[in-house]
Every structure is written in structure tokens, then in C-alpha cells.
Length: 352
Image (cartoon, rainbow, N blue to C red; front, side, top):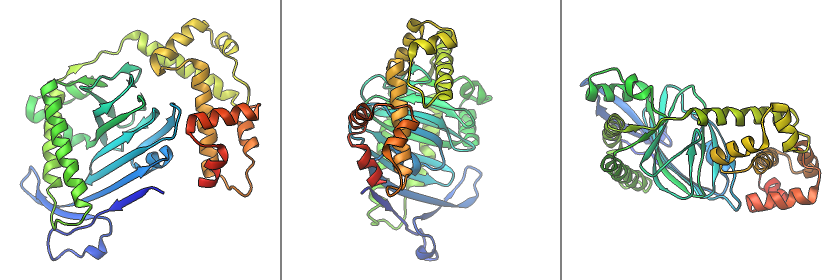
């Protein structure tokens, strides 16, 4: 079973802790000089279920799919300071992410540790790169077998003001052109150091030893530090070939979705969408790190996993769920499922 902790402390004797479960209540002075109430929540999750990790971040409109074999392990240490979210996110299996940032926020992730060759919108992401997502736009991330990161969900107006305070110009000149930003190594190191200090304080707050928390002030400082890092970053240009390959993958996905119960035939797919097999394989290998057949088989297995996780074990037939996703050979399906998820379909059904 996963471990979930929540913390709740007041900053004054006037605050009734019992009336605010799961919350840490604080006050701080905004940049306008006015004092406002600031509610802070902290929770921690350790899980062996990537769907549980996905659902824990309920403010994000996103979907996770496991794409590397083996049992998933992950961790989340999440803080919410008013409308500002900052959290540590760890995946110990490769995950294919698609989705959007919380409403009114800009999502920014900075890597703490990674293996493999992660890709954001088809572009390789190196250690000192920040990946950036605007609200209302769907993005895609393919992680390596390990991705440990600090993620910010910063209100767009707050980040924009912090950038303007540095540049004295329209923040869209910075934010409007960035998908992947190459941070200056020194600024990236400072940001990681500040993030780790922040996370240590958040972790200590779970023990309930402090009556007050410095998290709101530390969070505000990190937003300003992030703004500075973005202002002095280098833009990573997305090539036209990268955009074409991403569109080609979407076209292939749309085609396969129309015949989800049918066996996968890559040759037929290529003929029907008007592309050579070589071109299709090159696009998938460069943008996802997988060949088309393996990619679609993995997607189908993930859909079975999701269906079994939500199903009633007393009434569902695993064989029928597999058939509904185009698997016609039950033995191959079961072997592929266990290889990917580290458990049998029956295990998933019982656990759900």
C-alpha cells in the first residue's frame, strides 16, 4: 500500500488546526505590501502504481503510460503554497506523459537526476535543460528509465511579473518562444540547490515539529530565481523535421485508434496514411525511442492495464478486455503484459 502523509500547523494561536485538516496556515507580505492569508499544503506519496501518481496531481490534465519493462516505483513530495505548486516527482520506469499544466499556470520542470535519453515534444532533454509548458497546450514527454525532478506550477501572472522586474519588458518575449530552455550551468546549479533546501523543509514539516513554516518565503524566492534562469537561458530551436515527425506520429495514432480491436499491421498503416515504412520507423525511433509496432503494443497494454485497474474483479473477463484492445493470442498477451508491468493481468485486477 502507498504511504500518504499530510501536515497541518497554524502560525498563530488564533488558527484552529482541527478546522483545517491537511493544511498549514501562514501569513506573509506580498510585493504590494499587503498581508494576505496563505494556505500551504504538503503531502508525500510513495507508490508502485503509475496511475496513482498521475491521479495524485489532480490539478494537471494529463495521462501517464508506462513504456519500459518492470515494476514501477515512484515518489511525490508535493507542496501547494496558495496558487503556486512546487513538487518533487520521481519515476523509476520510463513514462510517456501527455497533458497540460494546471489552469492559469505555467509548468516548468528541472531535472535532479536522469538516465536514458528523455524527449520533450520530440527534442532531447539534457541535464541543464528546463522543460516548459503553457496552460491550454498539450505537451508530450518521454522519460528515461529514471527521472527525478523538481516541478513548478507557477501562476502565469506571477512568473510574468518576475520576468518583467528583470527585463523591464513584455514577458512574452521570453515565455512565448520557450519549450525547452538551456539554463546557464551556474544558475541551474543554484536552482537545484535552492529546490533541495526547500524540499528538505517540506519533508521536515511532515513530522509536525515546527509551529510555523518558511515555505511561502522560500517559494517566492524560487519563483524569482526561476525567472532569472529563464531570462538568461538559451532557446532550444525545434526543427521543421521534428515538427513533421511529431505530426506523422499523431497521424499514425489516429489511424490505429480507428481500428483499435484489429491486429497491428505496420505495412498497411503506412500505405493508408501515405508514408514509407522507413520514414515512419525513423520518426518513431527519433521521437519516442521505440519502433512503431512496439509503441502501439505498449499503448494497447497500457489501455488494458487501465481497464483492469478500474474493473470489478467479480464480473470482468480479462480475455475480453484483451480482445477489445486487439490482442488475439491470450498467451502472448499475458507474457507481454507481465514483461511490461512486472505483474500479471490478474494481479492488476485484484489490486484494483
